[in-house]
Length: 233
Image (cartoon, rainbow, N blue to C red; front, top):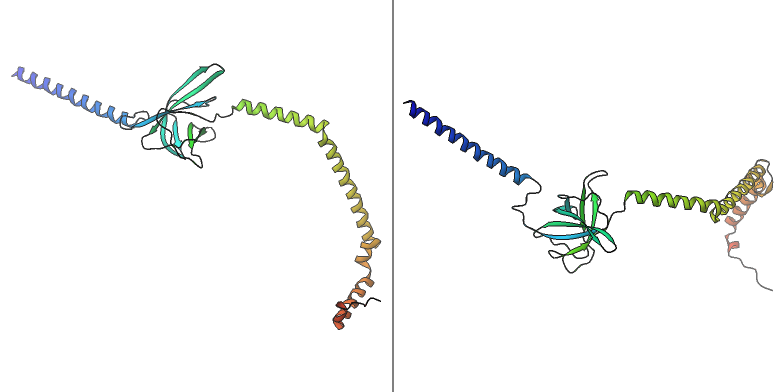
């Protein structure tokens, strides 16, 4: 009796181990399907993109075509050539997605400081598509340090040009002209206030207004004067 009880417990232990093993395999399968890198059920084709500078590109980085996810980066390697080094990015594209030849490949960012991804933008006109295994050239981003370096250099050159070049002379002439105009405007305003000059008389002399009124009244009475033309003698 004790022997039969022991055998039953032993079988139950085996069943528990088997159930635990099956559940573990099932959970492992679900995890693999959920992982971004798992591509057992996703067929695709590979192309290679060449960059001189591939900031932030890494394995499993998203690949987008017209803003839509179509694949991912499978490998990023640095290769050497005679005149320097370059970066080769191997991309896996979903089967059925056709990328036109002449498309623009460039590195973009999901946000200002977010994850980098490979963006593909098609050209305006095309007649053929990129085939599997082809190597295309990407548009390399400008390194941030180079932007700051070029900006500092440009500002320095501009500063020197302003100090010694034609811009300084032009600005000085402009300021002098503005000063002269300001002086003339002050004199004109003073004449108007003192009822002097043509503009001052125009504002304060009633005789001009009276003459204008009389001229208008005369035209209303004798409109033929507008069409009258003296005969040549």
